[in-house]
Length: 252
Image 1 (tube, rainbow, N blue to C red):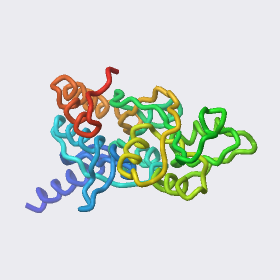
Image 2 (image 1 turned 180 degrees about the horizontal axis):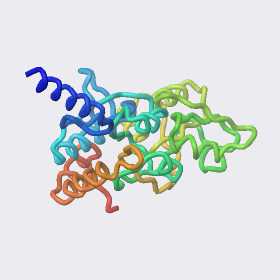
Image 3 (image 1 turned 135 degrees about the vertical axis):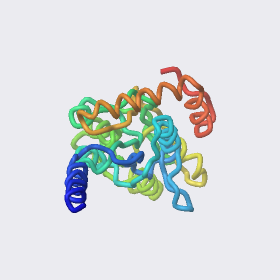
């Protein structure tokens, strides 16, 4: 009996030591829940948003449930790299630099950038007008990368942990403009119509969001892509998109 117990113990230790292999049907997914309508936390402490609904649907299609984790956007890529999360979905644009660090699913959402200003501002009408201005952005985003290209030596880019913080500083006059993803900017202005802010213009950037996983985890990417394709094929993706954005998804 002792020998049998010892053998079982050894086998158990071997299984525990097999790093990277999942032992349950749970996916640990990281997000920066400050980016509504894509991801946020409601008054009851629940993760909500288009990305949240989509990832839950993808996981269900794969036979998994999601364990959600909230994190600053700037640290999400590193968290996937170290294995803290199995995947990340957080309005994350697929870029060449990020593809060197993580693997992405097929694109699931298209976006552009928006430039938000105070209603009283009549001087910012084009990208050239931003060159010498104070611009607010969310740290680690493509909005930050774009803003840094737009300013000259007389301009300055201010980074924030969340876009809401940048919008509030814009409202108080500490910033001249905020550069941020179009759907999120539009949603913020809709939900905060009391603030004297508006979108001055869009910047077509033709960005595509993807779900990030640890580099080399082709099995998980394949499963996610298969589930995403099935959700698009059976109409569930369009249903989720319409519920959050009030319109049919654009043709990608």
